Image (cartoon, rainbow, N blue to C red; front, side, top):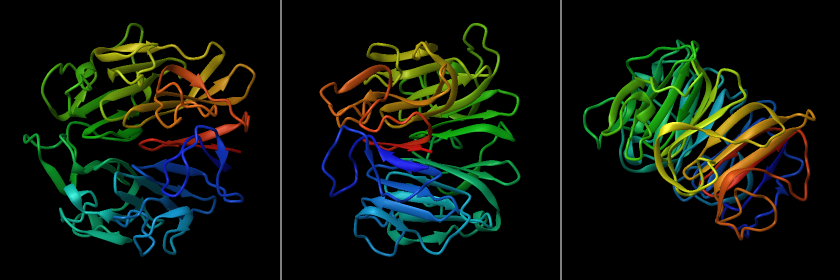
Length: 367
């Protein structure tokens, strides 16, 4: 369960396009990337953070950036952690919701829109009385799942109000769908969820047809909308991941990947730069792929964890590659990767099991 970095991102580290081992002998079970900071949980649920810290996003009581993981408080058995633009959200072992970093746009859900904190602080008010099971963040957009299977949103979002520029300063329940959910993803003012029946919902910013599969080709989608424009022979979905302006979804077979939205930086994985597409188009994965284990989306990058025909688990990454974040091959000459690329590097691991994407870096874990 060792973490590896496929590119640079943390202040103080030289840019690198080669896979390199991080923090030996640190071990993580979960990692996530923000703008220029990252977070992770170790096997006993201790929370760690590293990278940029000028807004207090590391939650370690100061604003000094860190090149190695710093333990966050005295928390243990943490249930969920996620990194946003300049903030971090966390669900503690007792189900309480915490946040650290900037208050801008209501990112921490504490009712404030300016200022910052450098320690993990509990979200108070009505949200503080709830118990939570998971949290998801990208840029200033957040989703939280309560333990009674209701999905909430706060920060920058277009999913719960008729105003296109509205920010939720405290968690607000999303209407039009209800859990349990099998997959949830927070993009930048664009979000998605799949319920246990395999029905997928999209809502938020629609400038690049992000919500077109839900029958919305123009205009902001204020409330979660059911995806009705299904690809041929697809009835249900099992996984979804969304970024700034693109989406990825896996059908119920777990073997076919679909993409939509903007793809001019290669993030759709369609073999060429695509300005935008309303239709869900099939992504051609490596020929020896037998199962898609997990998918990931960041601002301009995508990734998948794949089970191959030889039984190994491989990492595939595509999209923007200006810092080598999509190759891990020791070169970043190709600034855009248009087709899912099975990462091979100086550490040729065959048992990758989880990943995390930041704005311009990739984290992957091998067991």
